[in-house]
Length: 166
Image 1 (cartoon, rainbow, N blue to C red):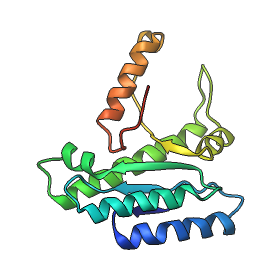
Image 2 (cartoon, rainbow, N blue to C red):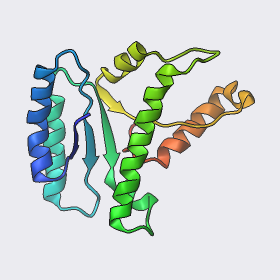
Image 3 (cartoon, rainbow, N blue to C red):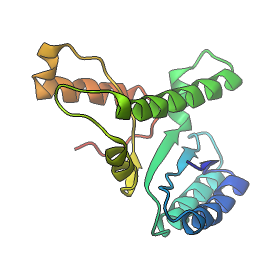
Image 4 (cartoon, one colour):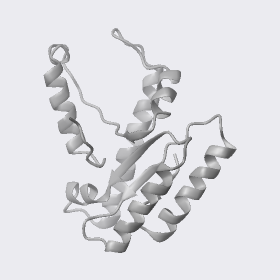
């Protein structure tokens, strides 16, 4: 999980090179980048850096799923907190979700289970990745529209960048 800011010059410039090296050196591993996207108030140069970085990383054949963290959402979800706290909350949320996802490979389920191979297969797929979770009562789990509505709401109030969910 190489982590970098896509809007800065150093992170956006080095990330494609680093990710390319990682995919070559560790061809038996899934490399899933985690990118922090610039805020709306950041400079046009930052936004161009992010677009160029996105293009360069997308050209790498062997990357897995990409996690896109939206710094704008991070700022909006924690408006009253100091900047340092906002970033700490974002890191904690990301790590909490990844840790939970990893733990799911060890938990049995009455419906189905997610084993380590399933997780690796999921992470090895190209595209934007979002990790989220919701608590469901059994009656809610039997209604797919309730599940999807609650999951979309959880994603809306997460740190992940908005993607096309239609």
